[in-house]
Image 1: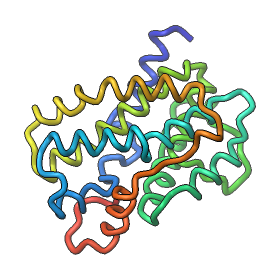
Image 2: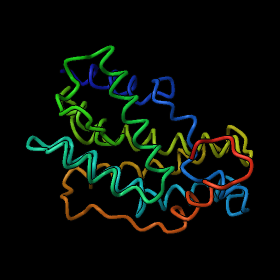
Image 3: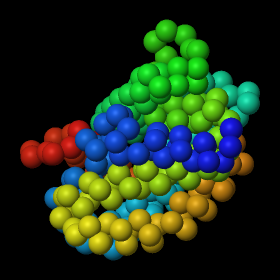
Length: 219
């Protein structure tokens, strides 16, 4: 595969238009906005930066990287990735997007879909990593694309919820470029021992969102 083909596939798979339903999830920030802890673009950028440094962004990057290894046990990674979900809504978010991603890839690139036992549900980062590896896409490129989409989707939710201007969203994504690239590079060499996260406020926000009275998002 040429670099150009790899780029095109990643742009397609990580596009907001790829049918995984990412736009329906806020990753818990709907409650954070309502509680007043995210009031502007700087707050939103800092929140996502923490997720990339020590939260779900970091653990997703490790899961995605592990799924790209030659000897990856996708069934074991799937079970572990789902078990790491701290709340019911975060489990829904990764399960539903993972299943939707595999269905969409199967419709266009069926030879890239992993052959797994019936009933195996791949969490989203594992699904992306497995398909990217089968396509021969380099890990760093796949991880950077995945993390960029992760951040961009939360930013999009924040722009609608706070609300913020589109320029605020662009500034947030520009500010996070370095963190995304740094995490993508580091995760290329990650092992199972690196699979952890510590973002209690994000986890609590997800729990609170489950009983939030008025909700626009599924998580």
